[in-house]
Image 1: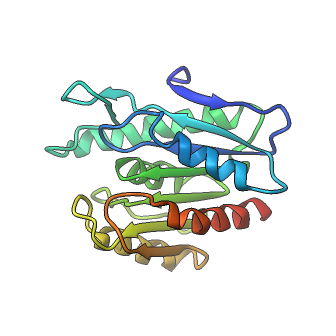
Image 2 (image 1 turned 90 degrees about the horizontal axis):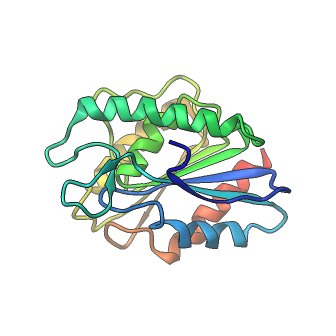
Amino acid sequence: MEEELFCFPSESATHRLILLHGWGADAEDLMSLGQSLVNSLEGFEVELVSLRAPQMHPEGLGRQWYGLFPAEWEQASEAVQSLKGRLQRLGSFKLPLEKTILLGFSQGGAMAIGAGSTLPLAGIIACSSYLHPGFRPPMKTPSVLFTHGNQDSIVPMEASKKLFDLFHRSNSSSQINLFEGGHEIPQKIYGVIRTFIESCLCN
């Protein structure tokens, strides 16, 4: 559903950053982070897009990529395939997937990993993410940055460590950044994320 997004288009953009929000949030949730990152990238013109999850949150506020409490893993598989289609359609519009970086938080991070690891993206950033059951990364994947707070009470830090171990076997350029904090993307790691984005844009 391409109408289900926020976009700051740029006719002169050479790259695109796509944001995937977490469970119970909405497409606006990561926009301040995205705008901060895009504005700090000197020498690059980056279009910013934030996608909205297709389902309403069961409590009526916010959205979800699939049911999570309890976890609807069959829905998760279908959601990943649907997201891949949305990303591929965006990639056919002006800027190819090879010029696209995907950033997701929590459930959005799991979706970024699930959908993005088989696409020819410039890079993936998975913040406070977790592993979908049965997932195994392909032999060749985009570079991935994992970030996670060591006091996360929602998604244990070990989830990102497990993902990093899986990806590092197939892509030695993947990275992990563990920080003091909880289930969040604190401003203190914006620099780490920006540096990773810059390395992806330069390749």
